[in-house]
Each structure stands twice: as structure tokens, then as C-alpha cells.
Length: 244
Image 1 (spheres, rainbow, N blue to C red):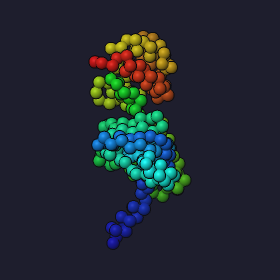
Image 2: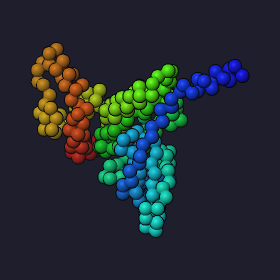
Image 3: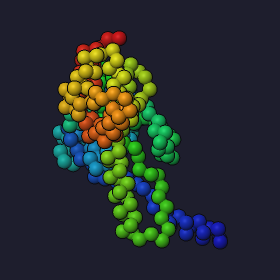
Image 4: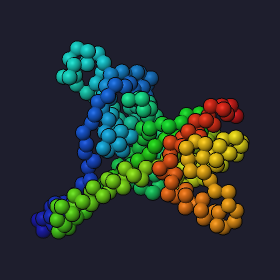
């Protein structure tokens, strides 16, 4: 009984980080793993986008036509899905192990439905890390717990990765990887990016250590804000360099 009471006491101190949110339904369709296509409305989480990487809810178009707002939704998990598109945003199943954030929930599957930015020789996806499985708070005021949860959520929203690969190579975070290496066989794309032609901040032409330090500082601070420019360069490459 003594150990049981202690266990019960410890359990009451655990605050499970369950990412709750309200799904918003928008027109879209999904392709299941077996090739079946389902059209209708797809429920996604705008405030907790990492949930969209694990599952979605679909209201079938036939049920919507018959029952309208009373149509029932069905949950489809990542292993059920191959692809889905909602509100002109495409999501594709990608196998990726986030070595910086391995958690219990990730041990079952390394598959994620990731928002796709580029498709071709260079693929690019948005990946959100997942909230912590368990948070332990001992004698912590509820307002402090709430502040910590809000802080952690804001960090997840801001700290997403731009996962990229070229010609089937391993996925890399282009916010940390020198993705300009992808353009070694495309000097025109490389020069346009250096000149800022994609809306990005131009790359410094300074030589030596000072130039490297300037470029590294720009990379760390600006690239996450300029991801659309990076993606534009990838899409330009895919359009002009389709075959290998």
C-alpha cells in the first residue's frame, strides 16, 4: 500500500503534454495507402500543425451532400494515408527520424504527413517537431505551467525545419545545411540566388574569414524568414533541370 500510495502521488504530479486543438474543415481530398481517393472536407489544426503530420479527419463528399453540417468525420492516421491536399496545400508521407527530438510517441512510426513545398529532383517539406511526451511539475503554480506550455508551443511553431533532399539523398534541414550545394550543376540558379533574384537577401561576395562570418550570420538569422525564396529557387531548379 505504501508503494501504491507513492505511485498514485507521483502520477498526480505528472502533467501530460497532450496537444489539443480545434480542427478547421476545408475542401480537399486524400489518397489512402491502398490508392483509394476520398474527396470532401478535411479537418486540420492551424494552431497545432504537428497534429496534421500524424492524422486528419475527413468528411466524405457523399455524406456532406446528404447530411450537410451533420456529416460525420472519420479519422485517418499517417499509416492509412499516402497523400492529401487541403486548401491548396499538399501533404505527402515522408519517412524521417528527428534525432534531436526522439520521443516515445515517435518510436512506433517514423512516418509523417509533411507539407510539400517542392517536388522533383529537389524535394522540400515543412517538418514540425512534436511536443514533449511528458512534463513533470512538482509544487508548480498552474499559471507557471500554462506559461511554460505556451512558451514551448511558440518555440515549436517558430522552430520548424525545411527538410530537403536532392536525387533521393538523405533529408537535411536547409536552415542548417548549405543547400546552395544543390545548385552546383546549375550555375544560373546559383548566381540568381546569390544576387537575391528570388526575393532573398543577396549573398556577400567578401572573401576570407570576415566574409564567411557575415554569410553565416545571415544564414542563421534570415533563412527561416526567407524560406519562400529558398523554395522558389528549388522550384526554378526543378523546372529547368528535370532529368539527371
